[in-house]
Length: 258
Image (tube, rainbow, N blue to C red; front, side):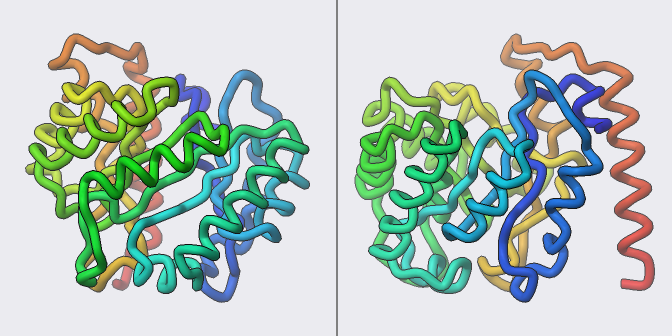
């Protein structure tokens, strides 16, 4: 509710995944219920299978289904217990569910800048994967640096390649980064033509299935500061400070004793 009040219009709010694998997300329906009705806000719910998509649709409040893809089979098996072929087959089924329910979709290409497993990777493979996703009629594609290992130059090159292949689609970026490198990565993505940035207040978050040494999501406040240097300003002001204060309090509460 605070994010909505602050002026954010696209919110990755919940994940409809296995409560055994990610117990923190077991009560996503309750989160959506307590959020209450919101107007003109994109509420994104992450799903990894048809069951999750059905749960998200049943809330009546999720407007966009988010689905993780990858060209790294090792990551897919660890994250979703899927092979590359299974991942694509499930995507097509979820796209059909989304269409029938009148929902949008955003598809994430995880490990898009390389992977720590030794799985095959190239810029061309990422660009082709994005083109295949676009070919299914999916409008939004988010290129993810899941482990925060990409350099600014690599971010620029990969995004340029993807945007060339998906000229009529919204190409975004989902980056993990240390705060030292955050601005340079945002500059690289913006200069490549990216206009959709996933971020997290305070930089909290990470993928529990990626590797042992997690790098948090890129902080929203760092993204805003970097965009301001590129002449992009968003009128969030004091409302953003309120959200950041809440985030700090929540972080302090749940990290106590760690």
